[in-house]
Image (cartoon, rainbow, N blue to C red; front, side, top):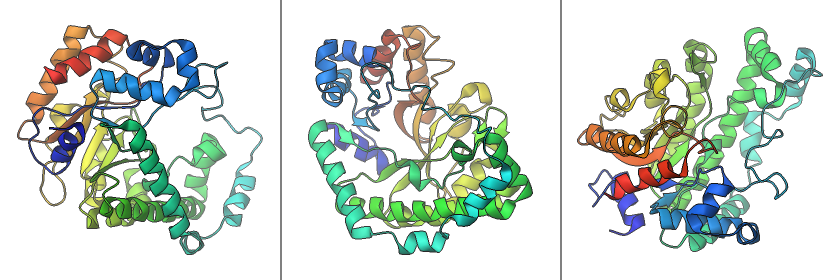
Length: 353
């Protein structure tokens, strides 16, 4: 099988010649350079090209993205500006005024210029697929998961105070992001019908901590689920399988996500009870097996295990999913500098073996 054909077979519920492998989230240029055999100068001359070569040599079948640092001086992917900060200068009342000044969800959809947005989206897919060659380019579409991360704009204290004291404003924020998600889903759905995006897409929004949902499941059922259900509808109508990114302890809301149309799960933090053995028990709302992108943990496995232990975990995931779920080996989140390069290689070797 070709690399793209291998992934497409799994997305279609078929049996490939071997379990496919996804990549693209190595957030450490030094590891990318070593995998590609490139100098520092060569990397900075073409960081995307060198990254693609590294993943190609690693034996990856498809790419979810390519991490590139902000600048050579920082020489890292994540910096202090990438994190959410406290907004000590913003009052709750000022945040409420900002929400009131925002456009309505209806106007967001009315003003969405589908032809120009699709041309931009289509061109970016074709351009990157040309660069990726045999590797399938299938970038995550986070915007299709209606955002619950408004705390990035307003700060945690102000946003969650708004959820508690002004739930109608919190609902407006979710509805606005739901409208954007619905528009973006139409772009992806149209790209799928044109054959330039595969029939599986990674979506999601961080809803949980390591102790469960950030707000009550009842709040999410009332306000978040209707937006997610509507956003996923264009994808399901073209037989695309939406795969949800799992951070933290998602167990109490997995049924809600699946009822909204989620057909796969990616990530998993075993220390939170999210293990591959548990996840494969779930079925889509149509009763079909889930599509799994995972399950290598970037907190408890890839940084801490030996290469032999990583190989054993890959083999265990393949065994557990056989007959129970459609599996693509991937890691839960970004691979950071604490992950030994030997473990990255071991993960890929275990799949090929």
